[in-house]
Amino acid sequence: MVGLGCLGIVALAADDEKKEDPKPAPAPVKVTAKRTGFSKSILAQDRDYTSVLVTVTNNGDDKVDVNPLYFTVTDTDGTKHTAELGVDEEQIDTVDLAPGEIITGTVTGKGTFTPKYVTYSDGLLGDSLRADVK
Image 1: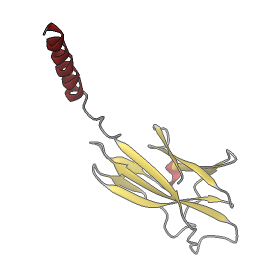
Image 2: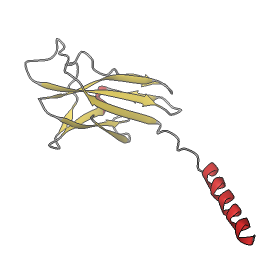
Image 3: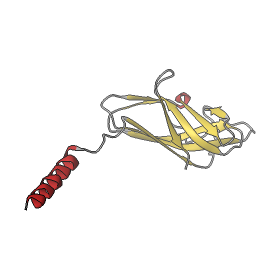
Image 4: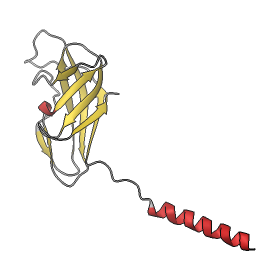
């Protein structure tokens, strides 16, 4: 009977460990990216452009600054493309994203390329987040 008692204690200890291991909190800012078509605006010239549809979610307690200039798109060759402002009709807006808010819009680079990932920097010198383009 001593062996059975020990097994019961081990099982209880394992159950207690599961209860103490809470789910990790979501990241304060979440960025996702997916391929999308380019929606030419009147500012777009006769060049080719590539757009990525980006969604920023504020899961934190503080506001998050969103600006198209805070994004870059890196292609499958490793070339980094800065945002071309005003060339896509669906461009992501410049906003202060309050806690719990979500914004979606495009980030567009000059040229025709295959986007691999998008990098978002919280402000010009802030922390960076990377999202693979799906």
